Amino acid sequence: MGEKVKILFLASNPKDSRHLRLEEEAKLIDEAIQRSGAQDSFSFHNKGAVTALDLRRAMLDIKPNIVHFSGHGSDQDELFFEDADGYTKAISSDDLGQFFSLFKDHLQCVFLNACYSLKQAEGIIKHVPIVIGMHKAIPNDSAKLFSQNFYESYCKDCTIEESFNIAKNALALENRDDALIPKMHINKEEIIVRDHTSETDPPNDSLVTEEQLNFVMKRLKGDMKIYAGFALLILGFSLAVALYLYYDNESDYEGFSFIGCLLISLISGIPIREFLRKRNGQAFIQLLKKERKKIAATIQQLSHQDIERFNVKFENYIYDKFAK
Image 1 (spheres, rainbow, N blue to C red):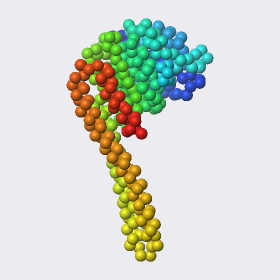
Image 2: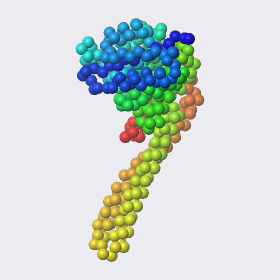
Image 3: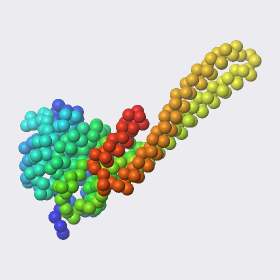
Image 4: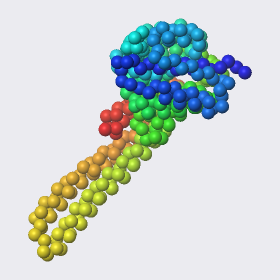
């Protein structure tokens, strides 16, 4: 039997930060390992209220293959650990990257399950084979669901890249726009070849997936049906009221009927406008699907910047238009 894959879970929730139920995430990961039936292949080490000293000792004592940080990050390129009194101690991504580079002989992946941790991931990836981070704030429930599905997949002999995509898809299946928040960086020069990883997988995992595009298309179609239904309902109600008052000889509200129906018809313009906006969104996603197909066919010749440019185009649409 080969050496166990060691997973180090670091929880940091300083006293002066928003409370997170990090113990629930640790429990979900531990349960995922137990359910996998691969307990003999993995060891899970849970460290809470982590200080810089705790981190250094854990890395030296455990020699983990995966370091999982759960807690708070900031858009100032920092992760929040705890000081000796339990209050926030901010550590920059450069300092963390230099620290993790000292353990590159066994460290395979750093998983930053914290809000605004993408910048930190970009700093750490210079020294580590694979880093996962969040490019914006992620809700607690989504962060836990992502972790749970990642480790359930990884313990079932999936690679880190495959586990990442499965976990993102799990968020998408829950109809959560949060599926676009996790990001993975791969440093090919630092890839450690082990039984549980693959060095030859093409870099398609960094490109927006066909499943993500199809998911957005499905959401758009669903929204179009809802708005079309609202518009028809409002127009139908307006017509029914108008006909009732028109044929009711005893009614004294003909004038009101006309004005009221006119107002209702104007209100119906709101769902009609949204319907047209979603239809335009469908056309945009169709164009992205065609563009993605061309990129995927020549991905080996493309730079990371080319792929990122396409991803940003997709994400800008999601967050600036569709998600509003």
